[in-house]
Image (tube, rainbow, N blue to C red; front, side):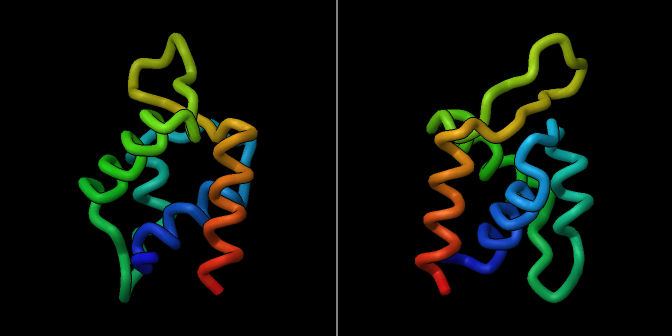
Length: 83
């Protein structure tokens, strides 16, 4: 698994009940040397939404989403198999 996606997944799992915007998530994982760009975070965010690993939080100005139970389990499994 790419280091950038690993960082995104790990950040989501640090607080699995938190609602995230792309900008907030990008800000949390944006530290060198493998800092993903906001575009990479957005792409990953959209894939996770499409796969049902994130669910959109309604009534928010910016696209906001949080992990589903299925997403939490899938990301946990991915990260544990990557080590």
